[in-house]
Amino acid sequence: MARQTRERILDASLAMFNAAGEPNVTTNHIADELGISPGNLYYHFRNKDDIVEQLFSRYETRIDDALLVPEERLPNLEDIWLQLHLVFECMWAYRFVYRDLVDILARNRKLKLRFARIMTRAATSAAAMMRGLVRAGVMHASDGEIRLVAENVLLVATFWLSFSAVRGLRTEVESLDLGRGIHQVMVLIAPFLRDAERAHLSTLASAYSDDATRE
Amino acid sequence: MARQTRERILDASLAMFNAAGEPNVTTNHIADELGISPGNLYYHFRNKDDIVEQLFSRYETRIDDALLVPEERLPNLEDIWLQLHLVFECMWAYRFVYRDLVDILARNRKLKLRFARIMTRAATSAAAMMRGLVRAGVMHASDGEIRLVAENVLLVATFWLSFSAVRGLRTEVESLDLGRGIHQVMVLIAPFLRDAERAHLSTLASAYSDDATRE
Image (tube, rainbow over all chains, first blue to last red; front, side, top):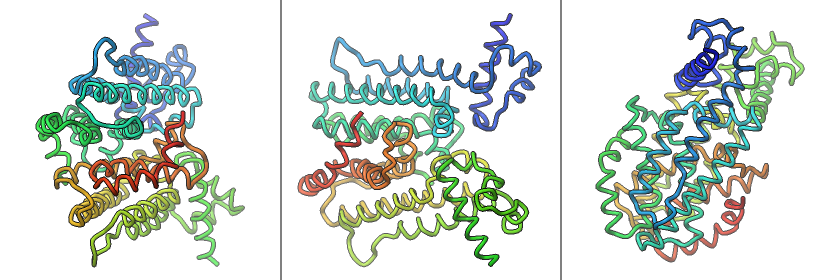
């Protein structure tokens, strides 16, 4: 029963953080939403930061899984596409982390270090994927180019939801929004692909690009 | 004298917002910092949002100037380099806007519309610059590619300071930090440049790239 309440608090907090932004939700709001007393909430969590950290741990486990690179064989374009889908779905599920990223990390040094570790892992994963494509003969890029492109892959993925919000692109249709983000990441890699793969990518992505640049 | 106090309040607010993040600074903090009474501050500004809007207007004027495209001649790579410097210097001067961008715009509908207009202008400017490079024979890219790359240019520029902070790259050395950001934007355009220009760019940027990817 205690465990059930704990999970209910985490689920409700995640939904409310995602909807309103973490800085705009208090523990009182969360208790109200669940129809429990603030005292009951504080029996399970020390404070709001404690809730944020527990949710961050869930997020961290999921993004770590998404960042795994296939080890027994060379990766192909579909692997990158799939990985981007897993990563973007995880970012969407925990979008409150990305909405106020700088502020949340500035307030919590532990989370700042954990997020920096995720970034480093993501950079390693993105570079490994691209080096795999080069070895497979699908992509032409130097190690230096790959390192720089990997940084832009991280940046575009990490801030896609924020960009989409401030650019006025948000459709409230999750799948379309994520598809556009994934496409903008692929745009970073496309110029380095062999002609055949670039053409294939361009066909796959044309549905997103028409919408993405509509004003 | 009233005018002088007004300007002093704006200057102090900008410095404090930039240092601590706008959500973490109250009008009382600002009055304290200046050694004036809260009542004196409220004589000049209705509330904190009023101060934020006045600073945003200063920022808007400066970024609009930076986004001008040369009209009498075709642009060259140096024009893009210069424009990026002006834009990044403006973003640095008003970095509180970018630090909590999503939250600030979510709380103020007027600023959200004004920022969306700046984004649209920046997209137009970036695309015009690249089409100019194509006409000058320096760049090879279709209109579709230019549209998509322009979106990434906006995204990387807008969130560079945030990325730099969460990635753990910040050096507190303004010029180095901005130089890296400008370089990451140029990386988006580089694959579409003629060989000679790409090599030139790579030489110019090598100082930044060594640092930017150091873990």
